[in-house]
Amino acid sequence: MKILVIHGPNLNMLGKRDPTLYGSQPLAEINALLERRAQELGVDVVPFQSNSEGALIDFIQSQAAQAAGIVINPGALTHYGLCLRDALADSALPVIEVHLSNIYAREEWRHKSVIAPVARGQISGLGWRGYIAALEILVAESK
Ligand code: DQA
Image 1: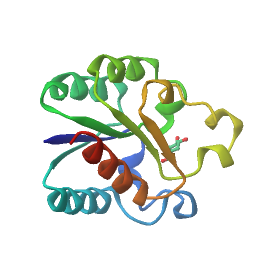
Image 2 (image 1 turned 180 degrees about the vertical axis):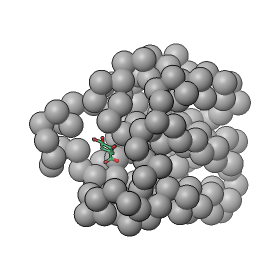
Image 3 (image 1 turned 90 degrees about the vertical axis):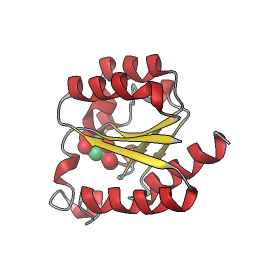
Image 4 (image 1 turned 135 degrees about the vertical axis):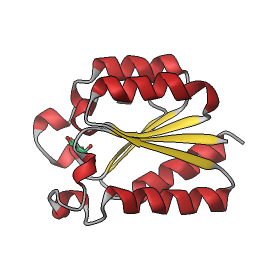
């Protein structure tokens, strides 16, 4: 079973971005933690990061048929990425939206997610552990 793990714009800068909001782990470390947990669960994760909405959509379209679910942190595309939202909906896969920071405790424009209505659920503000929880939930629900 394959779970896609998608990281949107600016998340390649984790470790350098404000650690009080996003934690100090670089993206490679978060992916390694996810890979370790996936191995324990007996599933594969396919991580992908891009700063471009089109590249994220191309990845979803090319991988969806072989996948059982999607964990995604859409970065700022969360708040306006309608093309990304459509691609996630078209994939017909269960999607869990993850945010490192608590988007509801920040600026008002971050309170709205255009992704949430097409997601199975959302985890916000729990740091890198949110990704692990999302993976565990997708695996548990697809068995
Ligand atoms: C984020 C929250 C977004 O508002 C922001 O634009 C990001 C990261 C998070 O993980 O907390 O890039 O998705």
